[in-house]
Length: 488
Image (cartoon, rainbow, N blue to C red; front, side, top):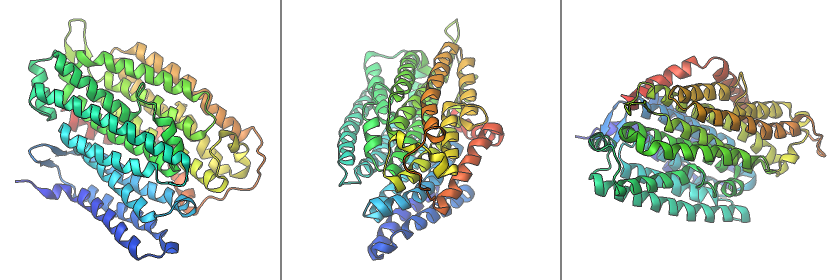
């Protein structure tokens, strides 16, 4: 008998989406900004319910699993959804129409992220992934009178559909050979048959290629810079943070619970993907003049670091024996890094959104003299960039140190060397932006006003970046607890 009370947070999120759509029908155009506050409050209520009421268990004989891992990512997506509503308000008011539909679609993408983190079967995960993708297709092209947004939407739909086809073809091969798509049953099959047959190898490669498109891993990254540039800025924020974290949550559970017994068959492939993703992402960012494109290539580089962690989930010693003693350490490092990355990117994108709301420019050169026009914006943005680069006292440094240390402990010290070299490269293009903020003088000297809600949010995120860098212990303890759920 299925206990549907396990889905209470997901049901509440779906109800919130329909509530926003219903209210939008009755609110006049000049009052629709209240929808942003209603959505944020709704996410806050659901967050409390998730923390204090959510239960552990399974649905549909394990197709959906609700454990500490699921609860952690549920909380992440609910907080992120609330933040996204807040940072979208001014942008929507000034630049977009149909606020109710925008917010409702955004809520459905949050729901998809929550379902992805609980999926323990490939077809269930695919359906959740498509719910996420369909929402993002619409949101990317939401600025319908902007040619760049239209172009980004077309590219994203075409390549997104292609990647979905790759995933489905990979699933068909895996199911045809194994007779199952459940993670635990895949693990049992591979335990007794650790060597990939040609058909299974093809299935895995197509599945990996499809997920690589969704993550924007090289060489499947070609859509990301154009889509990031063309999408409305709050949507770009969600692409850089929410969609990536949702897919990484799925990938981490999949590899930890299903594919570890066959690590020798796929580890080298992931290592190669990691290296070229780190190199191409960081080197391509060096020549960017648009801040959104720069952050797009930066996010590609960070996907490379995550893939490095995926490759190091298990270790094969000289005798060919697979050991998973340090798997949890690597898993903790991956999760810690994506949380630090998310906090830092929220801070960076909020600064970009505030500047764009008042100047209408995305060029890096137009950030010149920002320290004189808005000292708080300049401070938070430069701290976010330094955190992304991995400089000390910021969360990005501690998370990289934790992740790189875990990968090195698994015998991939040379791969950590590549990651460190690319982190040094990334510091150069982040410093290019910092130079504009504090050294170059801009032609426009008018002050930039920050809405009170965003000012408070920037201060909280700045505090979070620093706290995560100097005292990460509480977060690490939470991550350790939830990581047990997928490693056990």
